[in-house]
Length: 100
View 1 (tube, rainbow, N blue to C red):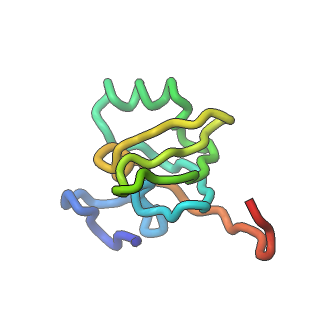
View 2: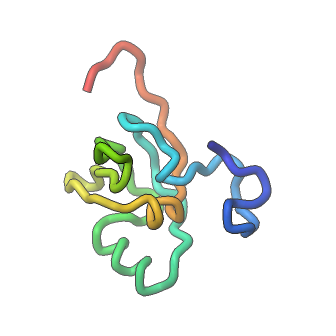
């Protein structure tokens, strides 16, 4: 799902093409564009590797859908949707016919 002018919290989004990490499908890959969270949480996520320009892969989700597991810098990290919906990325096209 892409947000046009405002995200779910009513904030103006800088880029229309950015997708919330929580909305990305399992198996997709993207590049982190921005993290819109308070400084203490942003710093924690930065230590985990969630920095602009970093590639993240959506690996799997829990049976109930939350949390999800992501691969970033070779490390698997679990995040709840409440946090992941404030991390925005641009999806990277994946080659057709490849399996993971």
